[in-house]
Amino acid sequence: MGYRELSVPDAFELAPTSHTDDRGVFLEWFSRIRFEQETGHRLPLAQANWSVSRRGVVRGIHFADVPPGQGKYVTCPSGAVLDVVVDLRVGSPTFGAWDGVRLDDERRNAVYVAEGLGHAFLALSDRATMVYLCSEPYAPAREHGVHPLDPDLAIDWPSADDVVMSPRDATAPSLRAMQEAGRLPSWEACRLLYAQRR
Image 1 (cartoon, helix red, strand yellow):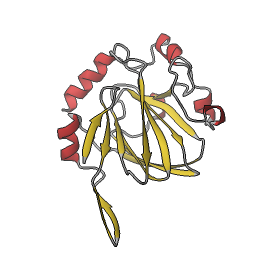
Image 2: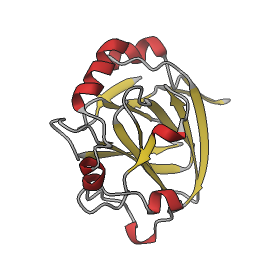
Image 3: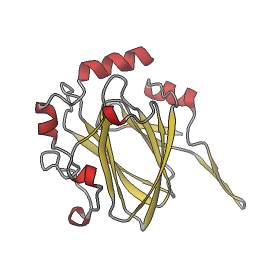
Image 4: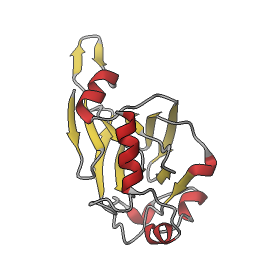
């Protein structure tokens, strides 16, 4: 399994080694020990989520208050998505930057999104299934969003004119509005949380 840190610090792409023979394919898509060694992060498993989206659906940009935040380890076992990580940590050297990774059922890769980072994806196939391992359970009072088409973020979504969003995502505030309202996590709070979990 290969690990690569994205241009947004504390986000990683993980490429598993697939073992193929006449029966099919076998792969290890998560190893706690290897994950901790390669990323320096811990991912205590609190919840596992599954979503199915049709082509053109954008989900996100979602994040949770820090602490406790919600780290996510995501993969696309069926179909294909553009998975996007956004640095929402006020004070981070890469605040407002984003990086995208194609996740699909051929490469079988995954992305880790540390607490304090925003996460979103766009379904590229007719049907795309996403599976998430989460460090904290869903808690609506501490879950927030930033509009995925915020022009200040300038995320390069394929077919951005034809995206389908939930009402929550379609009415999410901009990054600037969330920053001005004091609703974004701080770089310092995230660094402290990461250090406590090591």
